[in-house]
Amino acid sequence: MAAASGFATSLSSSASSIVHSDAKSGVDFSGNALRTRNSSYCSVACFPPANRFACNSLRYKVLMPGTHSIRLNPRCEVAPNAAEIRSKPSSLSALELLKTSAADRYTKETSSIVVIGLNYHTAPIEIREKLSIPEAQWPQVISELCALNHIEEAAVLSTCNRMEIYVVALSQHRGIKEVTEWMSKMSSVPVSEIQEHRFLLSNKDATQHLFEVSSGLDSLVLGEGQILSQVKQVVKGGQGVPGFDRKICGMFKHAITVGKRVRTETSISTGSVSVSSAAVELAMMKLPESSHATARMLVVGAGKMGKLVIKHLAAKGCKRIVVANRTEDKVASIRAEIKDVDIEYRPLSELLTCAAEADVVFTCTASKNLIFSKEQVEGLPSPVGPHVGGQRLFIDISVPRNVGSSVSDIENVQVYNVDDLKEVVAANKEDRLRKAMEAQAIIEEEVNQFEAWKDSLETVPTIKKLRAYAERIRASELEKCMPKMGDDITKNQKKAIHDLSMGIVNKLLHGPMQHLRCDGTDTRSLSEILENMHALNRIFSLDNDISALEQKVREKLLEK
Image 1: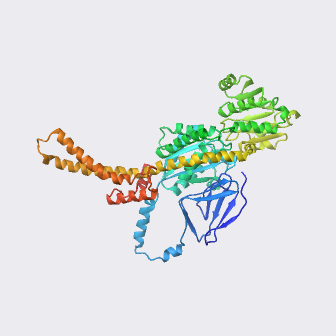
Image 2 (image 1 turned 135 degrees about the vertical axis):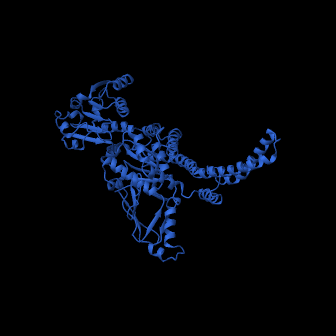
Image 3 (image 1 turned 90 degrees about the vertical axis):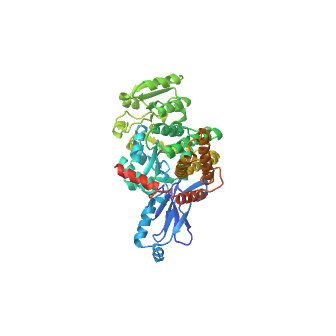
């Protein structure tokens, strides 16, 4: 993606500047730089050590070509210098300050939904393929992530264009650090290299990103449908897995709803193509037009991607396609479905022989190892004839890659991977942007609905504790009252007294409960509702000695 040229914008009265770079994407809180993710380039805000910025969430986003906006959510403030802080008189002793800071470590922080990821915007395929996680391993990865001290829930979305980890972090910064270190350990990619290419989004921005992903807005091919199937697979694979719980599961289920709604109510899917069809289009762009129907095609792999490649080749007029696969069953199924094309099955043991006879080779397997190395391709017979341009094409849409990058060094051989498909999807860019804007209105509405639901969960513990507190008092007082009523009290009278006590409690609780509602149907702001929650906790002594978040961290540590 094209990077924006550098420019600087002054910030307040400080000497800080925001510099746009084509280097890295992501949010990085290390040092004096805060990096923010963007779909086409990134922003790096560099601040002198004298100024410290407290920023809960920042997202820089392109709305229209040449028009930019910065959304700070909820705030980005310059904290006072350390010297200024030290100069303020304090009535608390050093020991009291230490106790207060330790106690507030979690009470001042709520759990956050965070996405830590790398995609085709931020990282080349050489990095993405090292971090890719096979679908079969997703449940195991969820368990490993939730075993980290500050991770409560998790999910993984790993495709050919992205590897994204969604978590509920008990502490945002600690959780990001733990997940990044886990990614490094899992992939053997240094932490510094992951930080260079990753992007970070939290809470509402993380939700919006996932909804854009499921809607096809963040895909290499705008509106492509395969990503929605992959999001569905996250939910299907996460069912029953400890750690794929209420918030993450709810967010992914809502993302599926959003993806369906966007495709139903907008023209985002009209004329859209998949990665497989883009690969076929790329092949047609590189071949002479006269050879489109006669070029010898080899497709390696008969899974979902391979089947789509075969279908699109048939739609382009190819009459004969050789398919190399481990077994013949899937090839026979495809042959029965596409009757007008001669589809020939060949076992993988004959792969090099098939490649020697092919003009164009498509690779789309889940193999973690190279299928074609430089030495193997060099051993193939002389190059193809001039009727197809005199070059053998390898179009590799697998992640990890199936064709070694050094194969492109061979004379009369061209190798293309998923990152090269940008040449195809760059067409009709204005139309794609218009379709994206149609979908954004729906996504914004759905994000607000999900955030209201998620925010309502914050007050649930207080509501439960307040009801339990009232119920204990009601039951205790009723127990004291009943013996005073005498032995001749009837069942109907007992029931009437019980119903009376319940009615009084419910009416007394109705007001406080109304002020704890956070479902998007009231006019109160979230901050007001949380203030009400904290006030009720204090008035009725509902808080424990330690916060719920700190208790969860302690429990995790005790389990180890």
